[in-house]
Image (cartoon, rainbow, N blue to C red):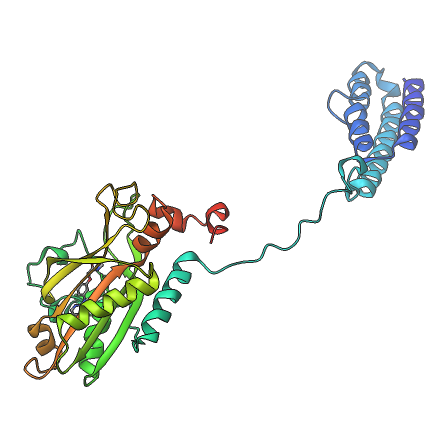
Length: 338
Ligand code: 2NL
């Protein structure tokens, strides 16, 4: 048995001396140090050694084990940080830095803001957590209007108040502006809004909206149409062509939805316009006299128009992206295209 131990020591030392790579360290471990390895085989054989020889043989084996472990540790460390030279292709081009970029929604918001600024609109902001009065009440929503339903609005749990919610449109900012400012008012409100909706290819529970408001003496539907047309020609295409369809919103009277002739197929019908030849781009109307009054503006003296649209929808139309969620997956294959 002592002979076997001496001869294994010679083998182990020879193997150790031959190690010159990380692979070499690993194959040494697999030969000698695993459960089915050479050392364990001798440990198992210790069972059959006569009792009186056991202390001596045991000590010899233990010495060999310690020696092997220590040498193995030393070589493991030595080769740990050395990548196998054969796996490096020195002819590969360098990877280079990965620069970040502005998110497509932010880029779109910035373009919209620039265009309205050039037409004399300022930019207003307000809180995301609103109260019922600013989000609904002052905007002429009836107390039993379905938008106030739990299904459509996220309400905020609060011990002190029971009328807090996440704003469902940025009109709440316009209400604050009307309350605090004497006309003329000419402002847009870009911002995040929240709806208690199931997320799908067409809808998110959090998205972005831009609303606009223009209040002064003698503002008319003609001003509304001219402003929207100027925006569409600056934002979509110089030859943008619009049609106004009558519609209904609680906060405007009259109200309209605006369609633009499809910029892709020029009206012939395609996937993006769902073969109608028209794309719905926004909703608008003349601010309801009751809304003006609720916000402290005399409807006998002033009139105004307002409009609103969703930014994600605009971007989907412009790019042909068919699933709104792709804008928020942070998939670099999508984001790098902007
Ligand atoms: C849409 C339509 C619209 C408004 C928003 C508004 C705000 C005030 C008073 C009157 Cl304070 N109107 N905003 C008016 C018409 C339409 O949005 O489809 N949005 C996504």
